Amino acid sequence: MSYTVYMIKLWVKTKVAEKLTRDHIFRRNEKFDIDKFTEYLMEICYELDIPTPVVLSSHINNFFEFNTVRFKPDDFVEAVDFEVFIIENAAE
Image 1 (cartoon, rainbow, N blue to C red):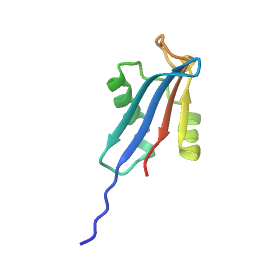
Image 2 (image 1 turned 45 degrees about the horizontal axis):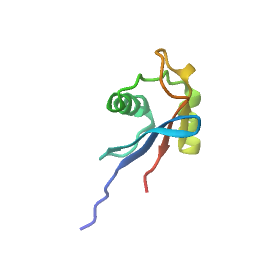
Image 3 (image 1 turned 90 degrees about the vertical axis):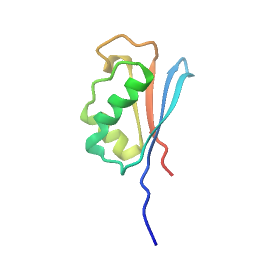
C-alpha cells in the first residue's frame, strides 16, 4: 500500500538587530497551496500574537520563487516590536 503524506512546514522568525526574537515552526497536514498563503499567514500571526502584515503580490512571488519572504515594519498597519518578520519554507 502506497500513500502520500503532505505537510506544510514553515519556519517563522522575527529579528531585531540580526538577533532572533521569535522562532516558531508552523505545520499543517495538507499540500501547500500558494493561494492560501494569506490564510496561513493569518494563522501564524495569531499563534505568535503579532499583527498580520499587508500581503502584496511581491511577497507571494518572493515566497514562490525563493521559498522565503521578509516583511518589514512598513508592511504592518499596527506597530511591531521587530525589524523583520521572515517566513521560510522548511518542508523536506
